[in-house]
Image (cartoon, rainbow, N blue to C red; front, top):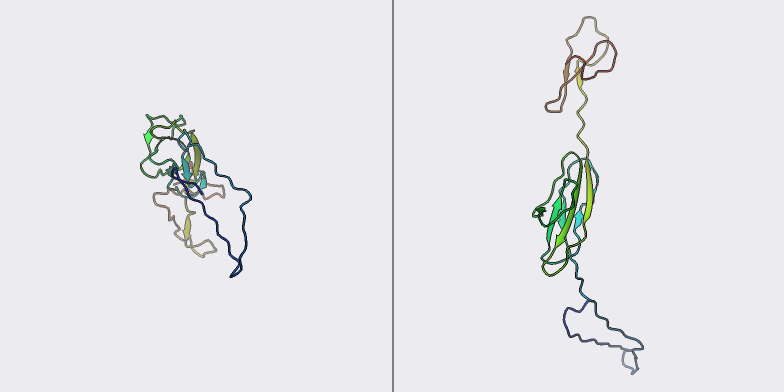
Amino acid sequence: QIVGANTAYVGFTGSTGGLSSSQKILYWTYATQAQSSQTSAPVFSPQGGNFTTAPSVTLSSATPGAVIYYTTNGTAPTTSSFVYTSPIVPGTGTTTIEAMASASGLSQSSVTTATYVVAQPATAAPSFSPAGGSYTTSPNVTLSDSTAGAVIYYTTNGSTPTTSSFV
C-alpha cells in the first residue's frame, strides 16, 4: 500500500494456536516514491471506436484538481482550448477528440487522442400497399416509409431507383 504521510507503523503477527514459536522477518523493504511532476493524462470513457448511436464521452485525470482542455478540430489542445465541464457527444461521422490536463504546480500532461465513428442511421426500406402479386385489375399502389422526412424514389421499368428517379 502507499503511505500517505511521513510516518508509518508496520506490524507482524503469527500464531500456532497455544504453542510458542518464533517468526522472523528475513527481508523487508520500505521505499519512497517521488511524486510525479507531470499532470496525469486524460482518460476517455468510452474509448474511441465505431458506434451506431453517439456515445456520451467523459474525460478524467487521475491528478486531483486537474483542468482538462480539449479540441475536436484536429489541433493540439492548449490552455486556450475548450475546458472540459460535461460529457462530449460526437456527431454523425468521424470525430477526433484530443485532450490534455493541467494542474497547479505540475507540468501539463501529454496529449491523448480518441476517434469516434458514429454511423449515419440507415433510412428504412419502403413498404408497398398492396403487396406485390398478380391482380385482375390495376391496383393503386401506395409507398410508405417509417423514417421521418424520407423521400422515396421509384422506377416502373425494373431498373434500380436513384435520386434521379421518380419521387
